[in-house]
Amino acid sequence: MRTVSAVATPLRRLSPVAIRQGSRRCFSSSQNLQATWGFIGLGRMGYPMAKNLRAKIPAEDTLFVQDVNTAATKKFLEEHPQGVRIAANVREVAEKAETIVTSLPEPQHVKGVYKEMLEPATLLTDGFITKERLFIDCSTIDPMTSGAVAEIAHSTKQGKFIDAPMSGGVVGAQAGTLTFMIGAPHEAVEQATKVLSLMGRRVLHLGEQGAGLKGKLANNYLLALNNVATAEAMSMGIKWGLDPKALAGMINTATGKCWPSEVNNPVPGVIEGSPASRGYEGGFGLALANKDLKLALKAAAEANVKLAMGDAARAVYDAAEKDENCKGRDFSVIYRYLGGKE
Ligand code: NAD
Image (cartoon, rainbow, N blue to C red; front, top):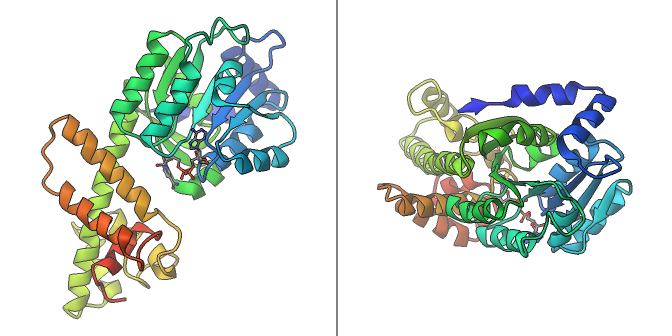
């Protein structure tokens, strides 16, 4: 793995003029030298990411935005009257922007959006911009779908497609402190890192296209399981009569320590300000955790990876999602689903 944030940091430290020159050198081929950007999917993550992107690119550059939710694009334009255009559809984004970032919910949305952007395969010949595009998909999807989309982009020579799933949540998207795990050919890493560093703090290059998603899914599989195991361990200790804070404190100096035990402990009152301590509001949604688990299981099955715990964990998350007392809350609510003492 290569951490390439060092490449990106200087870009942020450059003066506005230097950024402008850098951006033009790297991203522009249009006659007036202004660079064009695209952002598709102005959702919980995408909206603040696009905001950061717009704030950090040169004022004279244009950002084309698109979302099926027209209220989101309208609001974005109202908030950024300068240098933003709402594209009529995603094909227009691909036609007019050199660097295109997507942040979409599920594999089928990514597939649909890229099909529309890449077909017909005339992006470089239709008269707008003749330069190969850089497509950066930040959605969490399965590596197979991502690979199929990359294949269309690469085989038609319309652009480079890289997967760049992210972590850091909505708070990180707003603060511009996201971590991106990228799968990209070496020649695309530097450029992608510069772009992603406008929206995040760290870019981890894990390998060729698809590697970012594989890393993200492996991590989130572990997280989903650790979350259930922590809920179970805390529940058993508390029901045996142990003090919740003392138990968590001990685990966190011992071998059971993990992110759910230390940072996102599922027992209310153990960690001040945690989702559990505020009724499981906010945080990493149960549905998103279950979505990532589902994707990890699918990708593991495709690669014939034997998993002992995956299906059991999936059943727990599925059932918790249907429970009215858990639905829509932080994934640490699994503790409540398991009947943990609150
Ligand atoms: P979201 O559902 O809030 O946003 C997705 C946006 O895409 C919506 O605005 C939707 O209208 C738009 N969209 C859907 N289909 C479209 C289409 N065909 N054309 C244009 N726009 C379309 O999702 P989110 O929470 O912002 O997450 C985006 C991605 O990032 C997901 O893959 C998610 O798993 C991943 N992710 C989310 C978080 C998080 O905390 N929310 C954290 C890390 C990763």
